[in-house]
Image (cartoon, rainbow, N blue to C red; front, side, top):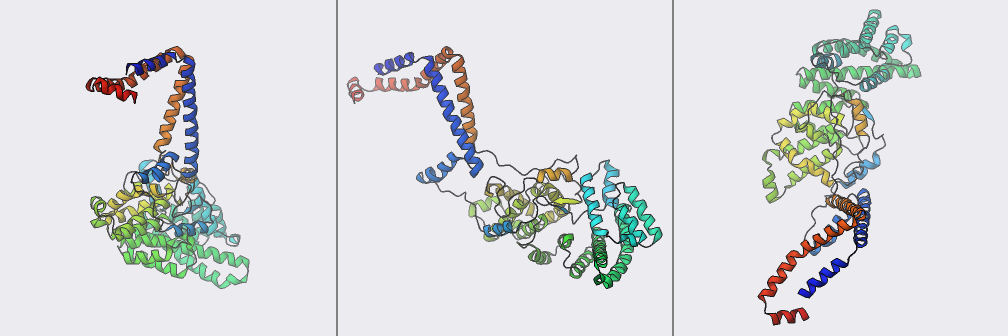
Length: 511
């Protein structure tokens, strides 16, 4: 025993400062190479190499079972969505439930002093109005010529003045539309103006319908008059919904969808879904979803989260996370959880608004699908429907975060949908006002082994630098550290030597 201690002490005393410099430098280099490899592997495959090896190879040897692999039940749907994704990643869409500027947005400004709409958002609306409400033949009708200029005006008061000028010349549907949107200070006033616009719009529509095949000019007029008529009827239905006449609003929307089935750009079905949910007519909601929740059509938060709400409604009133963890999920509960995961993957910003973990603002006039702006627009109108279904928000709270453990990493990869766009944050900052904190897609945290390797590399690099600068002092510290490290072992050996007979200990040491 004493020979072992003396040889160890002699070995430590013979080590030179150069040895410690070489030792710390080598360990720093090795840990740095491991960190680089770990980071490269993480960026490419989304997991730590050491963690992957331990889970895939070591865990089965120790008797563990890997239960972390996600279900691929709907993977084929994701592939189909990905193949059909031909639109731009960050295309901005007109909000189908956008508010009225005069009766709602302006009233918010009067009360709070804040502007709820950004210039970028209003500029997009101006472009929409010019596309829907004007055509090349407007110069043939004086009122339409004035309105063509009015839609380009940036000053709201100038637009309103121009609309009144157009009405002084003749009855003009688009002039009534502008006044209903921007001058009316209540929904009741807006509805009256839209009803006047409807009378004029129907006359213009019937006239242009008879002449639509007489040339390109008449085709353009008919297209414009159709857009105006559909817009007016949709906004009248929204007025009825806001004034509490929900059944009347549903009938108007259904009639409009039957009369103009090809005009899907207005997304009237989303207005219809919201109104049916208000009536708690869940069977009709399911029927609408069956028609529009198709893999060949562009998805929306309204479609995905309404489908999740309906499936959650079947189990949420009796759902208990403790009971589910004991007995496992039933088939209906599994369907509800999968629907929530599907919705969260499509738009991951919605749950925090539905669970009131993040404050709401007025929705913008345009939204970015899968972005924060869409999440605000959806929650603004649908939060009450989730609250009405007992236990639905509790089920969402218990399950929504599990989505991020299922989605492949990096986040640009998709699971059930096409890859999540990386440009949503930039576009949302343009659409949402400055006083709102834009929600960013939740990021996966770095695996433990990458953080551990980074810390180890930094620590050994610091030791190597200190040993190079102060070799004598670091040598003393190293000897003291090693002596302290082996002190418990020496203590145990001394105890063993005192207990065992000297002859037996001598035979053991010889072995």
